[in-house]
Structure formats: structure tokens, C-alpha cells
Picture 1: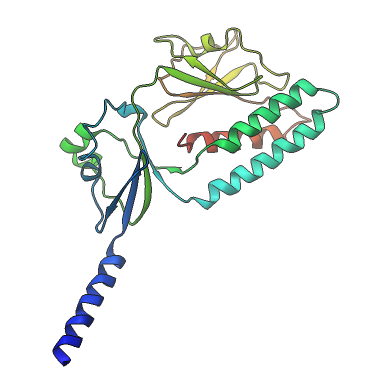
Picture 2 (picture 1 turned 90 degrees about the vertical axis):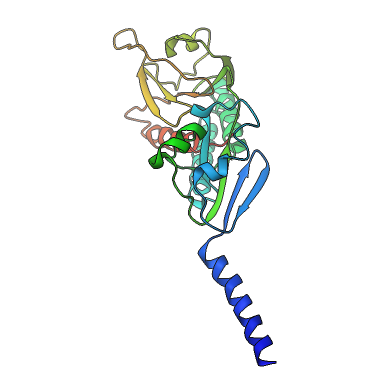
Length: 246
């Protein structure tokens, strides 16, 4: 009897110990993978690497359930709503563009993007590119190469545009209607691989800057002496866009 009780206690302790040591969940394109240890990246990628023609530069690993991101979104939506009320009567077109932007940001799926390069072949041959995943819940985004980029921000509507190989980012602005709140001197590129690049686009400071497929192009709001809140709004939008799963 004592032996049986002891064995039960040992088994229970083992289960508890394993749960304490590691519990890793990775959601990949709606499929969930569970690990009772801290897996390396190559172990996570192995079952799914050959299931599609993945665009590795645009693939990303996220830490799920980031409360701070949702707090930032809530603050940003409040800030945009304040602007909507300000412009609703005298500049209804501007107010409508802000309402559209607010709806777009409300629909984003957010998680904290980790500074991990997702590339199965690279992870197999370079030890430093094959990190362990600590305890927690993750989202792994794998997608095929998408020949589009998304343009949003201080424009009259969020639009998906066909990617242009070797084109300067300013070419995506042709025919687009900017609002009177837009900063016309610069554009912010949120590259598919997680880099943030500020690209000057005015005739006096323009430099050639290309955009990766599946990237986001953010037209920022122009900060003025009397509208300093736009600096905060721009930063909040970029924070969320860089941590956007989709």
C-alpha cells in the first residue's frame, strides 16, 4: 500500500515538475502544436516547412497575449476618436478618413513580434539562428509570397497595391489621395522582415528606397506646433503595425 501511494506521489510530482519546466504552445496558421519542453526553432518548423512555398523574409514569430499592445491600441483609438470629433463639422472628409483608419486598426490581430529570423534552412545550419522557445504561447506566421503591399495612414482609405519590383516607395503614392493632415515629406516603410525605414519623398530630400512584398507603407500625420499629439499618434500606429500578425 505504501509503495503504491509512493508511486502515485512520484508520478504526480513528475507531471507537476514537467509542467513547471516547460509548456510551449505554437499556433501556426490555425494549427496548434504543444511541447512539454523548450523546443528549438528548427523543431517547430520541421513538420510544416515543406507544407507550402513559404516566403521566409515575411515569416515571423510572435509572443501571444501581450497586454501592453492592447493598452496601446485602446489609447490610440481614443486619440483618433478625439480627432474625429474635432474635424467632424468643419472637415467631414478628414473625419471620415480618420474613422476608416480607426476601423482598420481595430480589426488588426496583434501579438509581440520577436526578433527571430524565420528560415528553416538557415536554422538547420547556423546554431545562432536556431534559438530555443521559452515557456509560453506563440504565434508563427507563415505565408506564401504575396505580391502586394498595404498603404495606410493619413490617406483617404487603406488600400492594397500591387508590389513593384525595384520601384521607389514614392511610386506607390501616385494617384493616392492624402488628407490635409498628412506629412508629405516622408513615408514610413514597415518592411515584411520587421524593419522600420523612414523614406524621404519630397523633391528636395528624396532618396531611392524599395519596398519588400507583403510590407506596409504608413503615411504619417504631420506634426505641427499646434498639433503635437500627432507625434504620439504616429508612434502608437507604428508600434501596433510592427506587431501586427494580420
